[in-house]
Image (cartoon, rainbow, N blue to C red; front, side):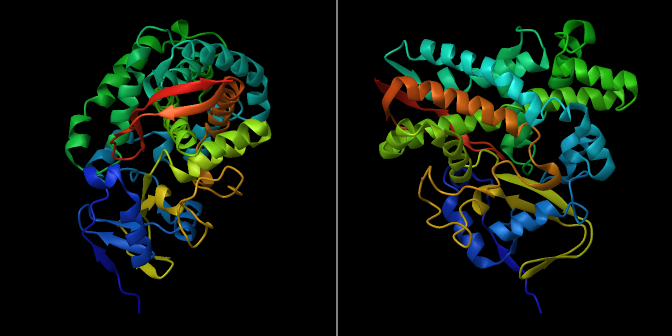
Length: 391
């Protein structure tokens, strides 16, 4: 007989969001699925169990289930991230060709040149903020240019993306303060996302073509535009910020990277594993389901803890160690399965371009005290003062 373990750990409280890993370790040690009394959901924290949930979207559904708070899920109706099965495949197909490896290879040289110019400008200053001056600037420019939206208004992208991710959590103060973001986002996108306002040949133009062709409805098209615009940069931003902090804390790893530039792609994957930008995602349970040593009932919600799975000592050797030479295959920093991050190829291109440009110029990073940014779903830094030694 399976016994459900209860816990009063609030994974969305300020102390846990700031330093989540001890709470994750406690949840991993308790059971495969632990009922969280604070938010009426089951935490799934072990690697094999998170992988199982993500791989079985027929049982663990995203439809009307991506937020811990049931009342928030209506806000995502028709969104690709809140769909399953044929609907999800149809919505995802609109930009799948544009985000495929073959298509992205054509962007590589241009992104490399952009990153090189950008890093040269940043390093012209003796000291800078790795988050506000670097990590938050380059990805916004890249994604906005690809989607094809005007320059005006881009300064609000990150705030809207941040507030959107807060709504993936429970009905706490952060989420309530973010509730207006959907109306703001729709109003903005419908103003600047008209076909005639978008750059010809852009991702946005491709979405409008899909509306005309009947692949998606107009409402679904606007949802797609919002999703790819506002959700397409947080992984890169938060990973780059943490990368510079980790390399400042572990200079021997930066030395290894500079000595062997072929390690750069895997270094980014190791950052994603160790400090997963997306920490949680929720699924609805369609029918009574076995998860490891636990059974969760139909109609409940499971919170998959990516940040815990990527540090699970059952799967990873020395999981708390930052090692850019480790085998990072299988990490869940981009999710897994049908709902794996659609933009992960672009995120990798951006990160490799930035780290390559930094490796050409920087011998050592000296970081001040990092300031953590608290969000219900994503993990990142608000500020990281940096000084560098130049090559």
